[in-house]
Image 1 (cartoon, one colour):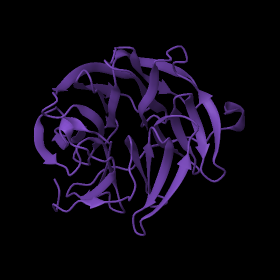
Image 2: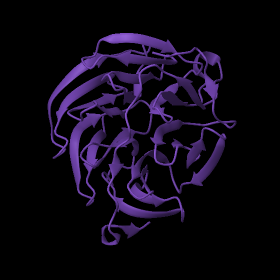
Image 3: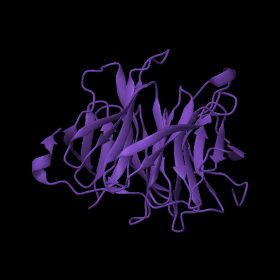
Image 4: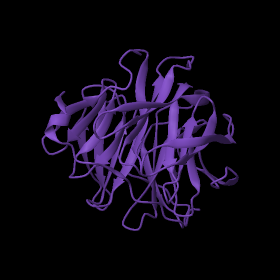
Length: 298
């Protein structure tokens, strides 16, 4: 529910595939990425200052780590990134035997693990992708297999429901979630979407428990109830939104990344936009700080 129709463009450069906005409330910074550049960025909203952190290969997502580092999903696997030294430490690769895939949407969950999915990186998309749980110790568990594009990760306010989308399913599923153990159960499909309504890409949940889904194929942001009923559709000034994120000091600023597309013969540049909303979002979970013995040089 926007409080205004004003949309602000936050950056002055093009994103090929903008993704994974994450608000760091401790530093007052927004992290986001360009998958293909490949790079991670910070935005300081007050000044508009952007800092770029180049990556060695395609980056699919990132999450915050306690102590100021990041956990990043690269084509080469999951790494810990230190912005201060710009160094990477390898943690684990969830699927080293699937070269046609790359890691995609990922978030730190209420259990302190990094939940990250993959996608089939060719057209037409094939069901070779999966969703994984990566623990702080580097153990990997396959949660869902047979996906085309793993996406839409989010948790409800008390961390007892996990949401997940397959953008080419194209469905959104809900799971009962145990925040202590990270166990999921009771999988059910709650939303089925199409290209006209907006295929489900990245997502976020507000304090009322509503699920905001970036409708990448329709230039919209769809807000659903916890049970999957559509409450509203917000038309955005970008053709292909990829992921929403709540931020700002009161979590009432919605940031949305997008990708560059020539859909329907019209060129639209990938970017990062922001606008105010009436219902705030939730703070981001953080991955625990890593002991040196748990990591390997990248």
